[in-house]
Length: 293
Image (cartoon, rainbow, N blue to C red; front, side):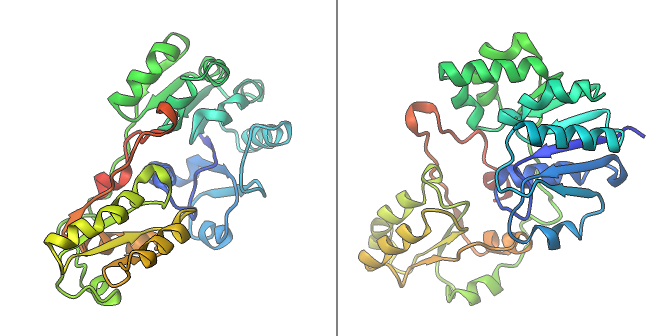
């Protein structure tokens, strides 16, 4: 049987759109055709024990294409007879490609998401992306937007193919009941705006908080439900307190993946005013949460 080694920094239980994308993609493959080499994160041992395929953790929270990590990936490819390698995010792990090909891998595929569009805009990073693309048989893109940014720089160096994320429609559908979530956060029957995403600048939750008083001026009973954790959480909580919005804005913190459909269903409107930042270097390539919502 053909076997694939998946090399990725983005893998559950760490939460995020790329992690969801990679896990969902692997769920479509025969379990005995997969071996995963991933960075570590809290709760990984318990999570990995539930999976039907083998997961090897790198013992670091950030897997980089270092000589040691590359040797480990090559050893796993040889040990398990992997003829294909899939990089969950091509940059920078795709730099491992030449060593993996020497280890007997015949086909190398790297996925791109959003950050690579920033890489190709910078001279140094652009050269690295070209090097990565040259080492791959296929480089995937998730949307026409990202293709338009990547293709002028990389298309001549590898085959490019669209690989967009999908949504499990058995989990995310209009019939999901959000009542328990509304009860948990005391939302009652108020009109609710929900945002589900990591709390980082690009996702724009700060815009929702800053503009929430304007919403309340027209809809005094409205509630804002911010679902997710991240580096901006404490700053957002301070802003909510300073503006006296504590009775109408709820920050849930991190939520288990199994509870996300009910959190979407608790809202009447979904909003994530994501922004392009740093002169186009930090962009939202697609946004899994829009599809889930």
